[in-house]
Image (tube, rainbow, N blue to C red; front, side, top):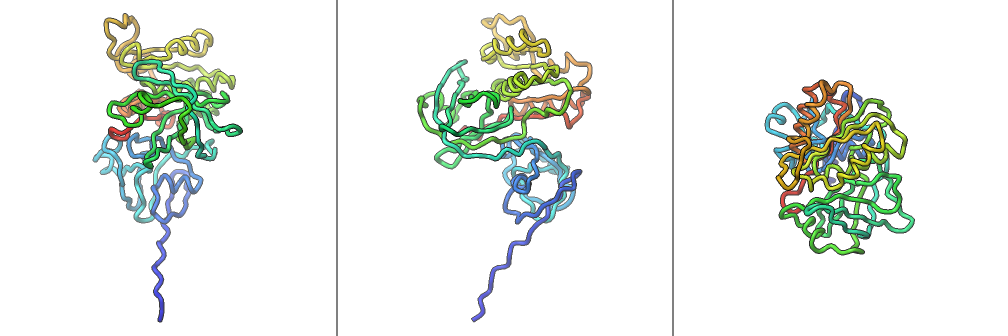
Length: 347
């Protein structure tokens, strides 16, 4: 009797342009995962099709779009050939137009951690401090994030708010999400000494140190967390590029570490701080800037052609900033972003 072996899955070739890097994949993983496995780092953030950080264009070939969300990839984007690399899988050989990221070769680890401190700094914001096991250290680049591995198999991502040189605890800034299962647990049931599992470092939101360009940071709400990490790292490393931080919130309470940002500006002449409130109330007694935070940047700068921009916050803010800043002269390759996303109502 002759046994018939199943046909082997044909390998597909992925080619990246303009770098001309190429690699083979079976087509079972996303384009992003296949690239990472091959040692090619593409920009990415959430990895669940919501933030749009990994959006790129398919120049040749066919893909399955997967679970990309319409807020990150519109029908017009699809029609123009764009995909989200974290969701799309190749169906044929493909040629992709995308930026590649250099300088991030830190291995990803999975580690247990213990809740060391829970500090409520605003009604809806907690600073969570985590302690890693003795003799364990999480190496990361300032601005990157970790994700918690939950018992139900889901994950929740949060930016690291402390700089890499700050040994000991990992600091996260967590905003309560209405209807969010995990954030509700943090705000109402989590106890000190609780054990969690995390994986990291993740993401390509980190300071491009070889550049000497002045920097504009744009933070929305707890998007301040990774920017805090980057600024503290820059100060520790003696980086003296001019830096301006625009931090936007709905009201004064949303600027939950306002005194720290003011301290940076007061103590370092190359750092400037511009807080912006979108909906200040009478109780805020606010005489500062108002409106959308990214529009404050546009009002202050005649052109952005000489800057680098690092933006972190809600996807709508990040998308508007990218669109309007590029129209205002910012080179597209000098915009770096991390958009905070939530997994429906179970964050």
